[in-house]
Image (cartoon, rainbow, N blue to C red; front, side, top):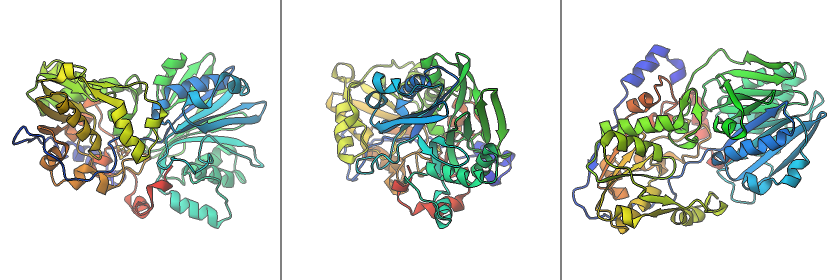
Length: 508
Ligand code: SF4
């Protein structure tokens, strides 16, 4: 466990970590049929994005635009809560930001404070009602408050049992509600800030929490630094966002990232800061850089596009391929493909086109719709790939289903060879921090016995991954969470060992 090691030991283990670049090559050019029965595509899903506005006229309208910029972080549901003259009002619903909100209903959310949330659910395929849609609202004798959360708590089961045993009734199945009940308990004997600090010290895991009271917004980031959260200013007020791309969209100015273990209080006197924990790490989720975040976002000082492009360059140096064209899987792999092309001198081509008008149907996380969605979403461009040796760049392989289909599509469109290069190490472990990577058994890299078996399963002519060392180097980072590649989780393992048997459906 990283947190039990000295910093020097941690750095050493990273430096000495296994180089995972291994190239497997096909023995012939015939596409082999896989005999693996995989049930889901490769798509990874994160749970959500959060956005907050303080001290700005029509705060909810600004939150709407902020959430729209964060839509890639969750498409299942969204909501906004505003405060006006100490009165809370909320609008929330299933669907995209543009489906839930319109000019009419936004006009009813007048006020100068608002928080918003976009959500992806591992079980959001209908029937669960809207009780899990955030932001949540809570009434309490010490003052009402609203809360929005991105991430997942690894000690949620234990805390839920503790709270239920002491009489708490939960309204949702979400981890996020746990913090609210802990705050309510602590608020009976503490000032609100100290109640929040005490509550935060009871939870473990990945989180970016935004808590809005009648007069303040509290912005909290987990002590491991797993989830991104940034502060900005706008028209004399403040904004908070999961990603900085939303600041550019609304015209806000970036101030700084919220530090791991920090609570920033936004009130009429400006910003104040306290640490809820002296333990601080910068274990930012590597998948934020690799896959989730928008390329125009900066995370902890590194631009996401620049990170991906550099990883593509390093991937070429570690795993060169003979090809006529470099093609990236849209959209998250395009930056890495550009980097690979620049480093190799092999021209970058648009060999795959994404249909940008696929509606929400695609995004619903049900297997049947995913299957249909992949075919609707991507097409190979025959005029580009026909007769070519294609170097195909993807950001990651999770279950292998999607990439197998894409390779099949390229071959059907006449590609002579397909050399697969992955801009991350093999994914071998599940995530406990809110990313739906599925169970270990579903990951192709743990099911297949080696890289050659994965290559054969997906039908590529050759396959290679980026090394762990290069992943750190791409962002110039000495710390990252890379647990889904290494199994080296930044939080105590004994907690999630006990959670492991619980269905993923428990995590929201
Ligand atoms: Fe991100 Fe993987 Fe760590 Fe989860 S385990 S937080 S997906 S790097």
